[in-house]
Image (cartoon, rainbow, N blue to C red):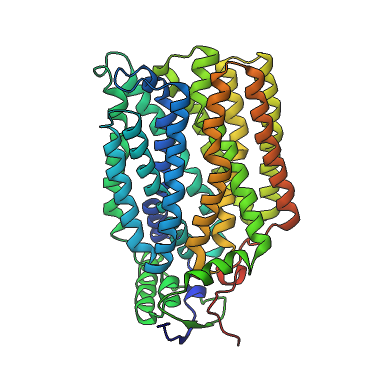
Length: 480
């Protein structure tokens, strides 16, 4: 039996958007943004220990198997994103960001006890499922808590924190893989404990975060939404020691129900906003291929073409991670000030052009391992901001009722089309030992990024400093 709609009039979105930045918003960023740090940690560990997995007396992976376990992680992430995306819209942001973190903790700890290729691939897939689910629950909650004027820079900075995790993973690989530090075959196992320790700590912080009041309103729970909103306002007023400004926006009227049918959510994405659906697919797919092609297999490039020892890979990942983190952090404010379209288009285009140039230098053999790493750091200063902006675009461009599902859908399709194939493909190209073949792969990635830039210029969404309800009208919104 369908739920009966309750007509609710509220000013909660306007009250959330008018708040000044305080410790409450910092708590939201830290407690929820850990997702990206954990993903960066997992991806970097997988790349940094590639040589150790090949040298392991138990696993003895070849180059293709190293690429396949990266693909297994991404397939798990896609599956988790879709499943938990629907559940996040159905049962709430808060419940799911505990479930997904719990799955991640269990699976990454289990990876340390892998006994062969299939067990390792299975545990990596489950770890990816936890991280994919985290993306949907976390990005939904962040979007709905952060005031509109800070949304772009905050989202980019949080997504860029992936590279804090990457730096931790690289440092952990250097520490645990150094010869003599741990017994043979123990180093890569110990490295996976880093994520479990971080995740356990963040569980405590998440206890202090409420459910999204926007989600509560949409699901016909106005009393709970008002109680949460008043609690947030008290915390903010106490932190600022000053009266809160009056809401700038008006009230909205909603025909809220306890749930939105799955079919209606899907139609909201693909039928109501077809241009935005195309844009999301292009942005997510191109950046997924670009990133996963290079980052998942960079350790293989260093060992295969430059003879870098597997225990030293982490030293090359650290400057790479620094460029990736600084890009979204420093460029992020411009996405709110200059606007989404010019900044997204320029970061995608610059990334593509630079990749083609550096790929040519690699093919000609005129750069050594250190110089190539510095080149990647420069490229990904822009590419990291571009990739973060793709997540920003899909998470703010669709109605609130389908927000988590939209994030899951575009992440899943983009990753399946662009990301899951890339590690396997580049693993095979690198395994051939032919620099020209690897360069051709880089050119394909560059073309995808430049094509995405042109797509953004043509149909991009001007969402800067706009309330979420103005960027995409809620499905349950009523006329004045």
